[in-house]
Image (cartoon, rainbow, N blue to C red):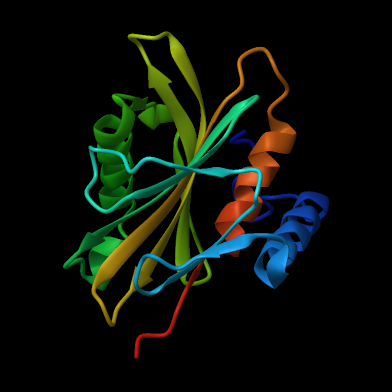
Length: 184
């Protein structure tokens, strides 16, 4: 999962597929969720809206099963632009979100943070020692300076015993389709 996360990640073919899926989502093959001010989200109809999680007020969740893919939108208010680009701050937010949402932990030595364009991406591994479970976690952080709000759009995969590449690509497409709207 984390190999090649540097300048060439994702590889050209993979990038083309993710870009095509994200464009299709934005162009109407998904339902748009606009219940959060300042965000446009394209979620495929195969994902169902999940009950809001107790651990993070206001967070929104969608899930798809077989294998389990959970996409969560969460945010922090009163964040400054320096914090929004700080790898330590973003890893801390991710660690806190995993714990508060599901009692999971972030495997920090298997986590990479990469600025790309105006956003920052995190690729890592989550684990739950109680349930002996884990898998990839991908998060796109987008900062809205007008609202001083840092959005995190997180995709988590749990697919024991299965090849994960196609499912990770799907999560990356969802993250790529996420967009901030202009403040009015």
